[in-house]
Image 1 (cartoon, rainbow, N blue to C red):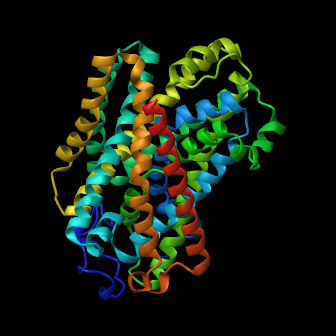
Image 2: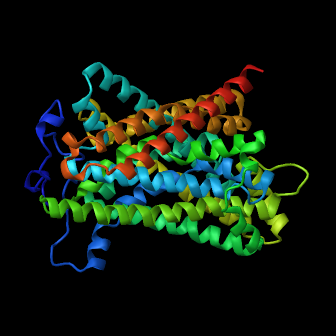
Length: 454
């Protein structure tokens, strides 16, 4: 592995676009460590650039998504598949902007915020982002603990504590090379996908109804209950920490520091994230499809992960269906905690330039997620885990706008992006996406507040 000092940093766009000069490389221990030789063919270059998109994609299939997908399928059949598709298309657009920002400017989104906004504003944005990462981590920790409980009968409170061990895994793999970390994440994604492919085969859904579910329907807007679940699906899909993460890890590739080299890097990074997010689309859609095929039309909607696990085998008549569901959940939770702790390091270093030892930073992030989970489970019992998952999604919804809006502003600024500035059609799509996300998340928060006040 080459040292960070030996890497060639991408040349920057005009300095007048930023308050500060060239930043310290994002994730310096792995910055520019994966070479992409110019003589590679298209497919070999695509393979060389593949990896960061899959680390990002795990945030779109984390345990926080499962409850909303389960509820959507059991209550409304296949109708809300269109919402999963639309939210995934939004994610593809936003993640492509993240890759462009990191490749063109040599800054991750956190560094860009620090170099654009005043110090007080940057600190506020950092604190909001830290809260969001901890909330996301909370959902992932609880998801892993539920999976360990379902598979091995391990009490949830002990399962939560076991998740600390992933800190050791990520440190070991990153020290071996960033490719090893990417390989583990891709392996876990394939595990989740394989489990749900089997679940779809077992559940035998109506193919015509599934395809029809991907077509948007006005019924979603007219039906308040359906709209509420749809907003929950959108809120659980686009994760703010993924925007910071992606803008950093695309810089692990050592591309040519020329306009042509950056243009090629943007193309392959966008292909990487788009392909990876299609896997996320399949898995989220699969959760809803299995829920719809197995539980829609039943006497009671199935909204909790534990209930779905308990009922899957009896309903489908396949003994291993529940076990595969739990294995997929464990892989999902562990995958998400790996990338969540990495995002925590990027955010702290990017916003306030505070560099702690990686093991200490990740341990702090994990403990901040574990402590509230242990307290809630210890005080209120294991029945409150679903409420904790919902709460984590509400916190994420509150922070999302503070990541999306700066991202669009920066990539639409010619002084910052030079010739790589977003064209008008991309700006229109991006701002439309931002408005939809902001409006729906505000409504989601408002409805949750009313629900809690009753």
